[in-house]
Length: 460
Image (cartoon, rainbow, N blue to C red; front, top):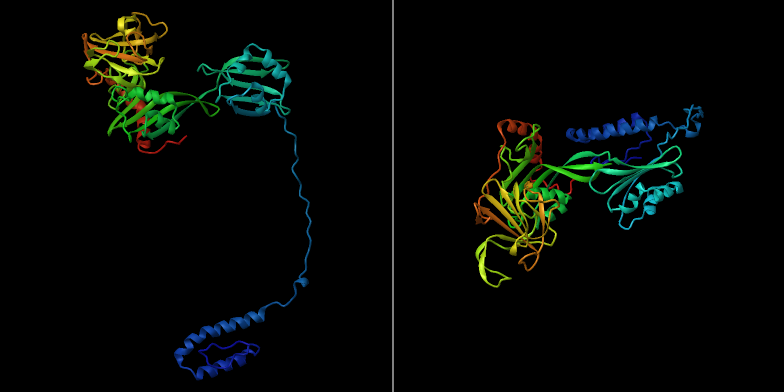
């Protein structure tokens, strides 16, 4: 039984009636209702007929009467052949941790081989393994199925890209120094100065050697002791020398940009294949040498303890006198660099300067580096030095109350303030070199444009 909707106002429709009876009942309703009313009733009628049709077509046969058939088919499996090991074994890599021992390291590498351990202990060449367990070093071992050592690669200290390679032969082990199979990768990073250059590079995952190169490249325009501002930005593209995908050392900066106090400095590396004078260095996009003839400071990072003045109370002599140089406070042993290309005019002890080096540059420029604790090995009068070469080390010799470097800059024998004067520029590229430079550095400068302003601090 199906109750009619309220708008029909009639008795319920009996669904068990046949189709002719249902139609008769609907005609009765139509005769008592207006025409527009039946426009909506047609929908109900269609639905009812659909329901009747549906009830009439349902198969009442039980599911148990449907015939079922079980089919079993045998599938042929491909033949499985044992694969030979071919002596490859298992390759593992571990990083040396602080406090590691050789035995502990071998255990983590999966080496279980008393004969190999005995060889490492008794072989003179293999003793490097015991002396150079520097934390962070990556060691690689290939072992057999039972942990027998087949090959061990242990990078050596000294920056020579050499490794101690221990190999199992037919009847004995051998150890030799071999060149590491290295690959060079180009890395792009950018960061913002918040406190210091080294703080920014540490946050960006940039090695300290790259930070030092940045200071060297832009040291003629930016005084990294005084000029850095919070919010300064830099972008750098440099080479990373890798072994098994891990950085072993950093290579050269290929291109860099530094925005200091709103002013942008940019440079790219260029080396003239023909060699000769002015054959390599960092240049601006228009071919000008980014480096001045002199660096602003002979120290990478330090602080100025006493500036250039004509009236300073001398802390040792206890009297007022001119201080015609710059004092940089730094720990004993800090490297002192030549601020420009030149020739050693004097190296030795000289009165209140203590241990001192004097360099002559071009024709009329000289620089003096005083109170040194020592000189660079082999430094002699008449030696040629290049800008950035280490010539000595910070000390407190002579009339000094503490460790610092006293630096003087003279033009034709007259003392000048190196922090205030306009330093002479280095030679630009020749037209032939400029064409080669633009061709060779186009890709690197485009990469700088790509990463400018991006935060690549944690990008790898």
